[in-house]
Length: 156
Image (cartoon, rainbow, N blue to C red; front, side):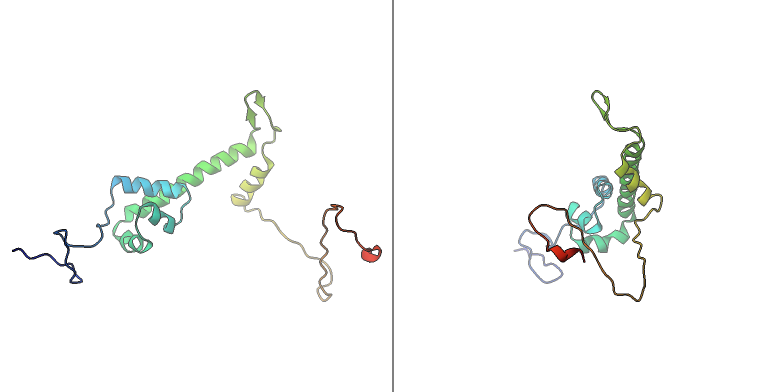
């Protein structure tokens, strides 16, 4: 009668081998998945799920496999490069339909603003003016939808 092997916790493996999870291996397919996950904008927790491992497994084994995080980071750069190129194209060229240009020659204004905020360091700024010691008054203006009637003295 042969002895059944035990794992490091003393649990007998009825399959005939040492129990536990499959070993973490980095293959060419794993590297391609990591690059694709980076390109799609996944964070490291999502990368772990995409690779079908736990967050802890990825955290523990990543230092032993620097090529894995390099592929992930390269994928992120590839994604940013691709999206920035499309954004730049949208910002500088008119939209094209099947019958020719459909938009203004200046391009997509929203894309221009997004590009300049990301690349050109543009920021939306809130400017406050007036006496700094006076109480702050906030006026909210809602569109007139005909449902609420304001009292006559509401303008004061």
